[in-house]
Image (cartoon, rainbow, N blue to C red; front, side):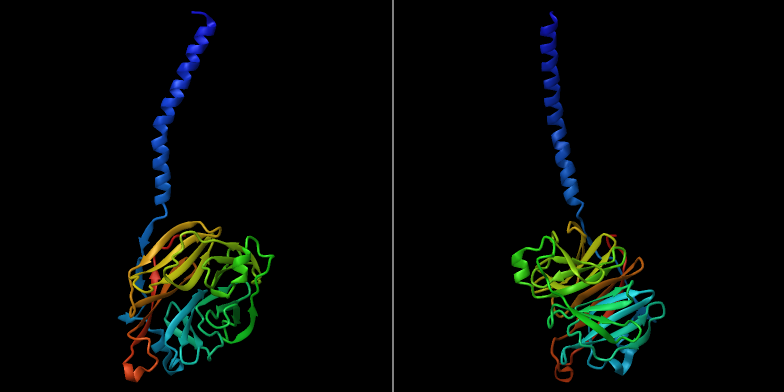
Length: 318
């Protein structure tokens, strides 16, 4: 056999081997892709009730008459062992903030009525030592800054979106109606804000100047917008039951919008336990729920019962 013929046979054998290898490897690659897709797993929330004595810690009752009429938990946040919980009064469209020492369940302070309207979300800027509330339904583009010691409003900012915001579509800018939630990320010194009606987010700098538009992949748009949180490279998007949906959900995303996973809360259909917020203090996450037997404003006529509870949240994606 001459060298030219031997070379041709060798080339044919190599080509045949490559084809066989490709056929064998292809299913493995498919399995790997499927495994990656399944890595966005949904898990059920693991929670432990925050107690006072033998029962649930009822911070509204602990505050006494200072919270008369302010009965519905909305946004919440925590820092350095203290939680800040907004309670909404639907009759006057304002909120009060309850400051609680988490280790002892002591109500440290209750604010006067604050012009934060629905206060759908509350966050803590650790660098500026400020609470920041979103007004949500009224003054949707307004962020209100609050002193965490006096629980008084220091200033506010009406947020505008311009062409300078990176990747912001013109159609989104034109339909801009404000934000339903804003969360401060201490590690990155930035804010994340969920756009009202759009459900994607704007990334802000530490002074709440809008910088970039990010699409959240796999967000639960069929559920009701509640609060947000952000830690490290993660965004926690909180949604509660709506219509026939019998659960609440937190979808977890990277700062670039990639879906990391979902945490399902098996409470649903009004009246029921409505997941209003999740927040963290250090590495510990908390979940805040609101329960009502009726949405009626008149307690006496409709025998309305309303309670607010906190849980330790033990299995968040980090």
